Image (tube, rainbow, N blue to C red; front, side, top):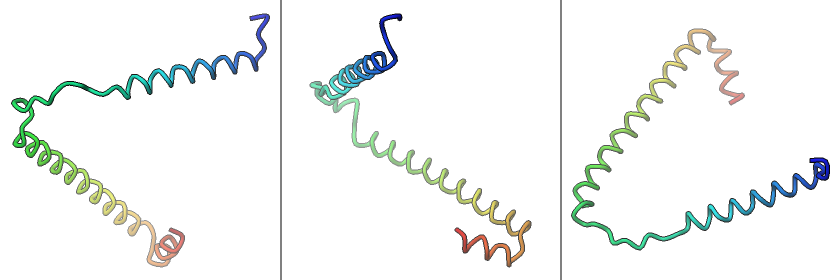
Length: 91
């Protein structure tokens, strides 16, 4: 790498990255030309999938809410009302 200096190498890497990004965008923008298989993908399966994901999201939200409530209880145990008021003002 005697003939290359750092700026030439930097420009070469940026150019190579731009070409790779262009190729990735071209590849990912290709449209599927296949028809949707209505025997395999039905409305009932979609409804079941949506119900399952709704249940999962509800469980995640409840778990996060419980974690937040436990953190608040721990903070109330460590800090008194005066300190909690100061923390709430800062947030």
